[in-house]
Image (cartoon, rainbow, N blue to C red; front, side):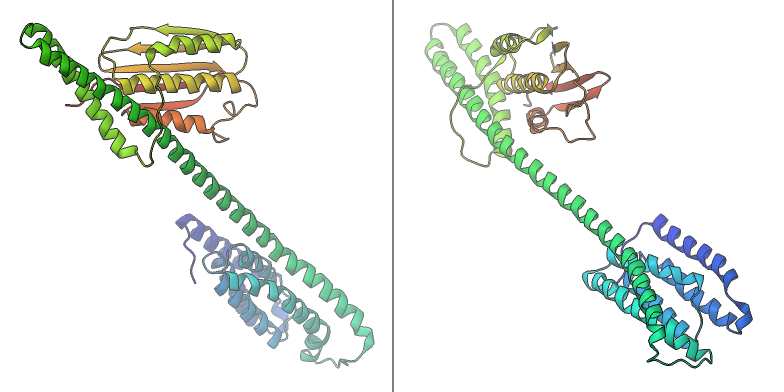
Length: 390
């Protein structure tokens, strides 16, 4: 019965209804002896306006009650009757299905009532003699009927259009959410496959080092100690990867080689061969103990950022900056914006699936990710932690 409204909406409706009443009560005809009735009817119409968005059904009921009382007292149409248009609008825009169609029917029934009342009933109630069968009154009745139907139905139709637009926006938002969830799930499937290979590689290193340490333990304890240190580091990284895999894995994965930092140079060459003026800055340089999961995340994020620069970027230099620290790696890719592209209009237009994939990559290793226009550049930046929890 009652729709949820924000406080400012309810206050706006009530204040508007009070101003409506205060203005139109001045125009009530006091010389007919029905001044008090006119004020009460104006109050009824104002009340209908006050609750029109809170309860369209109640507003429609108040409008009908006021109109019927007006006809029973034989009063001529009053300026406050214009509140009916606002009521019919909200029945179509915000009312339930039943109220929606009740407003539609009221547009026609109300038009007929207006025509019959003005042409035939009001003169009788005011003491005039009117013949219902008088053909001379029929054109007036038809004209009033057509005008009333047009005006009332126009108000209802405007509300129906607003209702349709609101539903279209809601459906579009739901579709975008569903698409984002689907893309995220597909990206998690890809990530899970990558993690599968990373963990397999780490376990292979552990096994090889353990076998070497076992054979070298008796002859060269130093070699065994080094091997055990490698096993410890690799096992810790593998443990992190396994935890991420258990969180993200949902489907069976296929096999496939995974890129690492050594493949970045080949990626840069491919981008330059496509005609991009690419500048790469690496400082500080990476050490020898970069976890495989971080290498994979860096490669995939840089790869997708450069792909977006090829597809959506404008003319100019594309820069890649990598800074390898003891606890993290900072990554930044800057590409020139092309006017009218998806990147140039972000965030007004939703970005593509690649942004979702890059964010998933960064979050999977516990990092942060940002992407968006900055001046005349589209900037992709990420900070990925290097530490491996014990």
